[in-house]
Length: 82
Image (cartoon, rainbow, N blue to C red; front, side, top):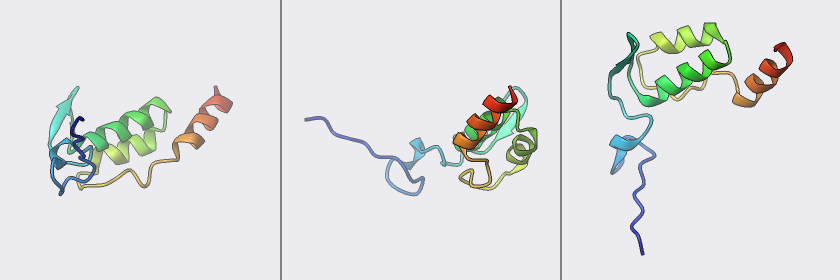
């Protein structure tokens, strides 16, 4: 039987593998504080939501993307707009 390693919450065991673990890094000159911040920024960019992308880019505290438009809504809006 294999051992399962859980890592959802940054403050728990193996938390350094969580998307919310605070770890500064830079991609194409843009600084991010966690992988979650980077993924939410990229999701906003993908759906051409520049306002949210800029908010995510400068939001340096730990966050979980709660202000980002719902992913399904973004898919529908993108499909309707083109």
